[in-house]
Image (tube, rainbow, N blue to C red; front, side):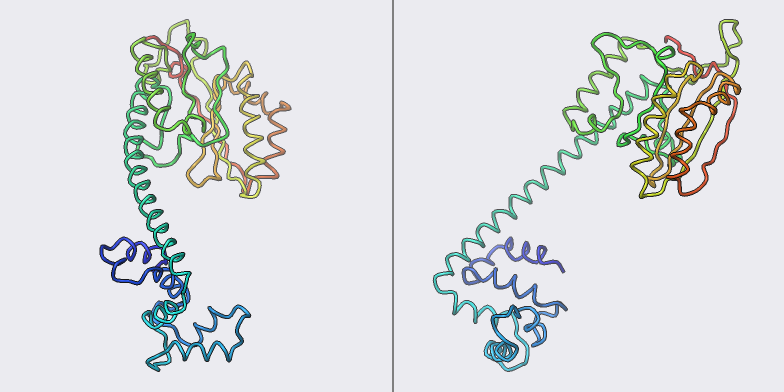
Length: 330
Protein backbone atom coordinates (compact mmCIF):
# COMPACT_ATOMS: atom_id res chain seq x y z
CA UNK A 1 0.00 0.00 0.00
CA UNK A 2 1.63 3.26 -1.12
CA UNK A 3 1.87 6.36 1.06
CA UNK A 4 0.31 8.47 -1.67
CA UNK A 5 -2.69 6.18 -2.08
CA UNK A 6 -3.41 6.14 1.65
CA UNK A 7 -2.96 9.90 1.91
CA UNK A 8 -5.37 10.52 -0.96
CA UNK A 9 -8.07 8.36 0.59
CA UNK A 10 -7.70 9.91 4.03
CA UNK A 11 -7.54 13.49 2.82
CA UNK A 12 -10.34 13.18 0.28
CA UNK A 13 -12.77 11.19 2.45
CA UNK A 14 -15.61 13.47 3.66
CA UNK A 15 -15.55 14.10 7.36
CA UNK A 16 -12.00 12.90 7.87
CA UNK A 17 -10.55 16.36 8.39
CA UNK A 18 -13.10 17.24 11.04
CA UNK A 19 -12.65 13.93 12.87
CA UNK A 20 -8.92 14.48 13.28
CA UNK A 21 -7.05 17.18 15.10
CA UNK A 22 -5.48 19.74 12.77
CA UNK A 23 -2.04 18.72 11.56
CA UNK A 24 -2.34 15.04 12.49
CA UNK A 25 -2.35 13.84 8.87
CA UNK A 26 1.34 14.77 8.69
CA UNK A 27 1.97 12.63 11.76
CA UNK A 28 0.02 9.78 10.17
CA UNK A 29 2.21 10.05 7.10
CA UNK A 30 5.32 9.76 9.29
CA UNK A 31 3.83 6.72 10.98
CA UNK A 32 3.11 5.00 7.66
CA UNK A 33 6.65 5.53 6.46
CA UNK A 34 8.02 4.00 9.64
CA UNK A 35 5.66 1.00 9.46
CA UNK A 36 7.73 -1.07 7.05
CA UNK A 37 5.62 -4.24 7.24
CA UNK A 38 2.28 -2.38 6.96
CA UNK A 39 0.74 -4.08 9.99
CA UNK A 40 -0.68 -0.81 11.36
CA UNK A 41 1.71 -0.56 14.31
CA UNK A 42 5.37 0.10 15.07
CA UNK A 43 7.60 -2.36 16.84
CA UNK A 44 10.56 -1.12 18.88
CA UNK A 45 12.91 -2.11 16.04
CA UNK A 46 10.88 -0.19 13.45
CA UNK A 47 10.63 2.80 15.77
CA UNK A 48 14.40 2.90 16.39
CA UNK A 49 15.25 2.34 12.72
CA UNK A 50 13.06 5.21 11.57
CA UNK A 51 13.72 7.80 14.28
CA UNK A 52 17.44 7.11 14.74
CA UNK A 53 19.01 10.30 13.36
CA UNK A 54 21.76 10.84 15.92
CA UNK A 55 19.73 13.17 18.13
CA UNK A 56 18.80 10.42 20.60
CA UNK A 57 20.84 7.34 21.37
CA UNK A 58 19.41 3.81 21.39
CA UNK A 59 18.47 3.87 25.07
CA UNK A 60 16.77 7.26 24.79
CA UNK A 61 14.81 6.07 21.76
CA UNK A 62 13.70 2.96 23.65
CA UNK A 63 12.61 5.10 26.60
CA UNK A 64 10.66 7.40 24.25
CA UNK A 65 9.06 4.37 22.63
CA UNK A 66 7.73 3.06 25.94
CA UNK A 67 6.56 6.55 26.87
CA UNK A 68 4.47 6.73 23.70
CA UNK A 69 3.28 3.12 24.22
CA UNK A 70 0.70 4.16 26.79
CA UNK A 71 -1.14 0.83 26.81
CA UNK A 72 2.11 -1.16 27.29
CA UNK A 73 1.63 -3.49 24.31
CA UNK A 74 5.24 -3.11 23.11
CA UNK A 75 3.79 -1.63 19.92
CA UNK A 76 2.96 1.95 19.06
CA UNK A 77 -0.31 2.26 17.16
CA UNK A 78 -1.63 5.22 15.19
CA UNK A 79 -3.64 6.76 18.02
CA UNK A 80 -0.77 6.62 20.51
CA UNK A 81 1.68 8.20 18.07
CA UNK A 82 -0.75 10.97 17.07
CA UNK A 83 -1.72 11.71 20.68
CA UNK A 84 1.91 12.05 21.73
CA UNK A 85 2.97 14.36 18.91
CA UNK A 86 -0.26 16.38 19.03
CA UNK A 87 0.40 17.19 22.69
CA UNK A 88 3.84 18.55 21.74
CA UNK A 89 3.04 20.49 18.53
CA UNK A 90 2.56 23.83 20.28
CA UNK A 91 2.71 26.74 17.84
CA UNK A 92 3.53 24.32 15.01
CA UNK A 93 -0.06 23.05 15.00
CA UNK A 94 -1.11 25.86 12.65
CA UNK A 95 1.91 25.18 10.42
CA UNK A 96 1.05 21.50 10.11
CA UNK A 97 -2.59 22.38 9.51
CA UNK A 98 -1.52 24.65 6.64
CA UNK A 99 0.52 21.81 5.17
CA UNK A 100 -2.58 19.62 5.30
CA UNK A 101 -4.60 22.24 3.42
CA UNK A 102 -1.84 22.66 0.84
CA UNK A 103 -1.56 18.90 0.37
CA UNK A 104 -5.31 18.59 -0.12
CA UNK A 105 -5.29 21.39 -2.71
CA UNK A 106 -2.43 19.75 -4.60
CA UNK A 107 -4.21 16.38 -4.63
CA UNK A 108 -7.39 17.99 -5.96
CA UNK A 109 -5.43 19.81 -8.66
CA UNK A 110 -3.65 16.59 -9.65
CA UNK A 111 -6.97 14.76 -9.84
CA UNK A 112 -8.40 17.50 -12.06
CA UNK A 113 -5.30 17.43 -14.28
CA UNK A 114 -5.58 13.66 -14.61
CA UNK A 115 -9.21 13.86 -15.72
CA UNK A 116 -8.47 16.63 -18.24
CA UNK A 117 -5.45 14.74 -19.58
CA UNK A 118 -7.42 11.51 -20.03
CA UNK A 119 -10.18 13.38 -21.85
CA UNK A 120 -7.67 15.14 -24.11
CA UNK A 121 -5.81 11.89 -24.80
CA UNK A 122 -9.04 10.21 -25.87
CA UNK A 123 -9.83 13.04 -28.29
CA UNK A 124 -6.29 13.04 -29.65
CA UNK A 125 -6.47 9.28 -30.21
CA UNK A 126 -9.69 9.67 -32.21
CA UNK A 127 -8.18 12.42 -34.37
CA UNK A 128 -5.01 10.39 -34.95
CA UNK A 129 -7.08 7.41 -36.09
CA UNK A 130 -8.95 9.61 -38.56
CA UNK A 131 -5.68 11.10 -39.82
CA UNK A 132 -4.12 7.67 -40.32
CA UNK A 133 -7.19 6.40 -42.19
CA UNK A 134 -7.14 9.36 -44.60
CA UNK A 135 -3.36 9.15 -44.89
CA UNK A 136 -3.66 5.54 -46.06
CA UNK A 137 -6.28 6.56 -48.64
CA UNK A 138 -4.17 9.39 -50.02
CA UNK A 139 -0.96 7.31 -49.90
CA UNK A 140 -1.72 3.70 -50.91
CA UNK A 141 2.00 3.25 -51.50
CA UNK A 142 2.77 3.82 -47.83
CA UNK A 143 2.42 0.50 -46.02
CA UNK A 144 1.48 0.21 -42.35
CA UNK A 145 2.39 -3.38 -41.35
CA UNK A 146 1.42 -2.94 -37.71
CA UNK A 147 -2.16 -2.07 -38.72
CA UNK A 148 -2.43 -4.89 -41.22
CA UNK A 149 -2.61 -7.49 -38.48
CA UNK A 150 0.97 -8.73 -38.70
CA UNK A 151 2.13 -6.96 -35.54
CA UNK A 152 5.74 -7.06 -36.67
CA UNK A 153 6.79 -3.50 -37.26
CA UNK A 154 6.20 0.05 -36.03
CA UNK A 155 5.49 2.87 -38.45
CA UNK A 156 8.56 4.33 -36.77
CA UNK A 157 7.15 7.80 -36.05
CA UNK A 158 9.62 8.05 -33.15
CA UNK A 159 12.58 6.89 -35.21
CA UNK A 160 15.52 9.19 -35.85
CA UNK A 161 16.07 7.41 -39.18
CA UNK A 162 13.75 8.59 -41.98
CA UNK A 163 13.02 6.86 -45.28
CA UNK A 164 14.22 8.40 -48.51
CA UNK A 165 13.31 8.34 -52.18
CA UNK A 166 15.43 9.82 -54.98
CA UNK A 167 13.95 13.09 -56.19
CA UNK A 168 13.95 11.78 -59.78
CA UNK A 169 11.25 9.26 -58.92
CA UNK A 170 9.13 11.08 -56.37
CA UNK A 171 6.04 13.13 -57.18
CA UNK A 172 6.93 16.85 -57.00
CA UNK A 173 5.37 18.58 -54.04
CA UNK A 174 2.78 21.19 -54.82
CA UNK A 175 3.72 24.69 -53.82
CA UNK A 176 2.47 25.57 -50.35
CA UNK A 177 1.81 21.97 -49.35
CA UNK A 178 3.87 19.69 -47.20
CA UNK A 179 3.75 15.93 -46.91
CA UNK A 180 3.63 14.52 -43.35
CA UNK A 181 6.77 12.59 -42.59
CA UNK A 182 5.85 11.16 -39.22
CA UNK A 183 8.79 12.85 -37.52
CA UNK A 184 9.04 13.32 -33.73
CA UNK A 185 8.19 17.02 -34.26
CA UNK A 186 4.86 16.04 -35.84
CA UNK A 187 4.01 13.84 -32.90
CA UNK A 188 4.95 16.57 -30.45
CA UNK A 189 2.47 19.01 -31.99
CA UNK A 190 -0.31 17.20 -30.16
CA UNK A 191 -3.98 17.64 -30.91
CA UNK A 192 -3.65 20.92 -32.83
CA UNK A 193 -0.96 19.47 -35.07
CA UNK A 194 -3.04 16.37 -35.79
CA UNK A 195 -6.06 18.51 -36.70
CA UNK A 196 -3.93 20.57 -39.10
CA UNK A 197 -2.55 17.38 -40.59
CA UNK A 198 -6.08 16.02 -41.01
CA UNK A 199 -7.18 19.17 -42.84
CA UNK A 200 -4.13 18.96 -45.10
CA UNK A 201 -4.79 15.33 -45.98
CA UNK A 202 -8.43 16.06 -46.81
CA UNK A 203 -7.26 18.82 -49.14
CA UNK A 204 -4.86 16.45 -50.83
CA UNK A 205 -7.63 13.91 -51.27
CA UNK A 206 -9.86 16.52 -52.90
CA UNK A 207 -7.07 17.68 -55.22
CA UNK A 208 -6.48 14.13 -56.52
CA UNK A 209 -2.80 14.23 -55.56
CA UNK A 210 -0.42 11.77 -57.18
CA UNK A 211 0.50 8.74 -55.08
CA UNK A 212 2.22 5.35 -55.27
CA UNK A 213 -0.32 2.85 -56.60
CA UNK A 214 0.85 -0.50 -55.24
CA UNK A 215 -2.43 -2.15 -56.28
CA UNK A 216 -1.95 -1.44 -59.97
CA UNK A 217 -1.76 -4.46 -62.24
CA UNK A 218 1.50 -5.46 -63.90
CA UNK A 219 1.87 -3.56 -67.14
CA UNK A 220 3.91 -4.91 -70.04
CA UNK A 221 3.82 -1.65 -71.95
CA UNK A 222 6.96 -0.55 -73.76
CA UNK A 223 7.06 2.60 -71.63
CA UNK A 224 8.10 0.54 -68.60
CA UNK A 225 11.87 0.87 -68.39
CA UNK A 226 12.37 -2.28 -66.29
CA UNK A 227 10.03 -5.25 -66.03
CA UNK A 228 11.30 -6.07 -62.55
CA UNK A 229 13.07 -4.34 -59.70
CA UNK A 230 15.31 -6.05 -57.15
CA UNK A 231 14.03 -5.70 -53.58
CA UNK A 232 16.79 -6.22 -51.02
CA UNK A 233 15.84 -6.82 -47.38
CA UNK A 234 18.51 -6.39 -44.69
CA UNK A 235 17.58 -7.26 -41.08
CA UNK A 236 19.98 -6.14 -38.32
CA UNK A 237 19.90 -6.58 -34.55
CA UNK A 238 21.88 -3.89 -32.73
CA UNK A 239 23.65 -4.05 -29.37
CA UNK A 240 21.94 -1.76 -26.83
CA UNK A 241 25.15 0.08 -25.95
CA UNK A 242 25.85 0.88 -29.61
CA UNK A 243 22.29 1.90 -30.54
CA UNK A 244 23.04 5.61 -30.85
CA UNK A 245 26.10 5.07 -33.04
CA UNK A 246 24.20 2.66 -35.30
CA UNK A 247 21.19 4.95 -35.77
CA UNK A 248 23.42 7.87 -36.68
CA UNK A 249 25.26 5.77 -39.26
CA UNK A 250 22.03 4.27 -40.64
CA UNK A 251 20.54 7.72 -41.11
CA UNK A 252 23.57 8.83 -43.12
CA UNK A 253 23.52 5.59 -45.11
CA UNK A 254 19.87 6.02 -46.11
CA UNK A 255 20.50 9.59 -47.15
CA UNK A 256 23.46 8.58 -49.31
CA UNK A 257 21.74 5.59 -50.93
CA UNK A 258 18.66 7.68 -51.73
CA UNK A 259 20.85 9.87 -53.89
CA UNK A 260 22.20 6.99 -55.99
CA UNK A 261 20.87 7.00 -59.56
CA UNK A 262 20.14 3.27 -59.72
CA UNK A 263 18.30 3.04 -56.38
CA UNK A 264 14.57 3.39 -56.95
CA UNK A 265 13.62 3.67 -53.28
CA UNK A 266 15.08 3.00 -49.83
CA UNK A 267 13.39 2.94 -46.44
CA UNK A 268 13.92 1.55 -42.93
CA UNK A 269 11.67 0.31 -40.14
CA UNK A 270 12.31 -0.46 -36.49
CA UNK A 271 10.70 -3.47 -34.82
CA UNK A 272 8.93 -3.12 -31.44
CA UNK A 273 11.93 -4.53 -29.53
CA UNK A 274 13.74 -1.26 -30.27
CA UNK A 275 16.99 -2.89 -31.41
CA UNK A 276 16.00 -4.68 -34.63
CA UNK A 277 16.06 -2.68 -37.86
CA UNK A 278 15.06 -3.71 -41.38
CA UNK A 279 16.25 -1.78 -44.44
CA UNK A 280 14.43 -2.21 -47.77
CA UNK A 281 16.17 -1.16 -50.99
CA UNK A 282 14.71 -1.21 -54.51
CA UNK A 283 17.39 -1.45 -57.23
CA UNK A 284 17.00 -1.29 -61.00
CA UNK A 285 18.97 -4.51 -61.50
CA UNK A 286 20.94 -7.02 -59.47
CA UNK A 287 24.10 -5.71 -61.10
CA UNK A 288 23.34 -2.22 -59.81
CA UNK A 289 22.97 -3.57 -56.28
CA UNK A 290 26.22 -5.55 -56.49
CA UNK A 291 27.97 -2.44 -57.76
CA UNK A 292 26.56 -0.56 -54.78
CA UNK A 293 28.06 -3.16 -52.42
CA UNK A 294 31.51 -2.06 -53.59
CA UNK A 295 30.84 1.62 -53.00
CA UNK A 296 32.44 3.64 -50.20
CA UNK A 297 29.00 4.31 -48.70
CA UNK A 298 28.17 0.62 -48.36
CA UNK A 299 31.63 -0.35 -47.08
CA UNK A 300 31.59 2.44 -44.51
CA UNK A 301 28.22 1.32 -43.18
CA UNK A 302 29.45 -2.28 -43.18
CA UNK A 303 32.33 -1.32 -40.87
CA UNK A 304 29.87 0.28 -38.45
CA UNK A 305 27.69 -2.84 -38.49
CA UNK A 306 30.66 -5.01 -37.56
CA UNK A 307 31.12 -2.94 -34.39
CA UNK A 308 27.47 -2.41 -33.44
CA UNK A 309 25.45 -5.52 -34.35
CA UNK A 310 24.86 -8.16 -31.70
CA UNK A 311 24.49 -10.93 -34.29
CA UNK A 312 25.11 -11.40 -38.03
CA UNK A 313 22.76 -9.51 -40.31
CA UNK A 314 20.24 -11.37 -42.47
CA UNK A 315 20.16 -10.30 -46.13
CA UNK A 316 17.67 -11.55 -48.71
CA UNK A 317 16.46 -10.35 -52.12
CA UNK A 318 13.53 -10.90 -54.44
CA UNK A 319 12.48 -9.59 -57.85
CA UNK A 320 9.23 -7.60 -57.82
CA UNK A 321 7.22 -6.24 -60.79
CA UNK A 322 8.36 -2.73 -61.57
CA UNK A 323 4.78 -1.66 -62.27
CA UNK A 324 3.97 -2.09 -58.58
CA UNK A 325 6.11 0.93 -57.86
CA UNK A 326 5.19 3.18 -60.78
CA UNK A 327 3.35 6.43 -60.28
CA UNK A 328 -0.18 6.80 -61.55
CA UNK A 329 -2.82 9.50 -61.47
CA UNK A 330 -6.24 8.52 -60.25
